[in-house]
Image (cartoon, rainbow, N blue to C red; front, side, top):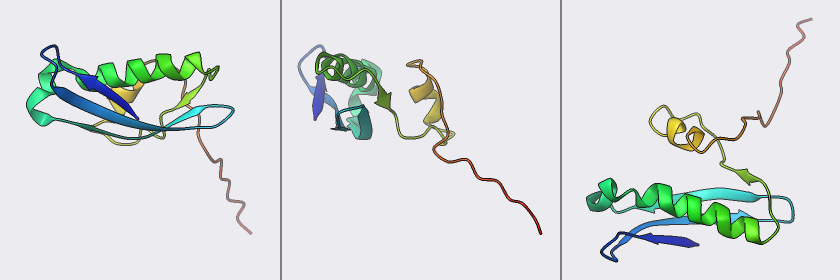
Length: 92
């Protein structure tokens, strides 16, 4: 669990990650809507990326970008997109 505070020390955002030997997995985050303009949502993820990297983990899976309202936010951190599954239908 990672926590980010506003400049006046109010809890603004919390993010949860699962971590294995290969990567960190972004699971969930929550923000105080009153502090939305404090950018603690960005800060909590950025701080988490750095902390996870100090554990020797070099990859973060942001767990999907398919939400039209939030996908752009995850993409704003950079990285590459990779589909989880590739499906092909071969009709008979």
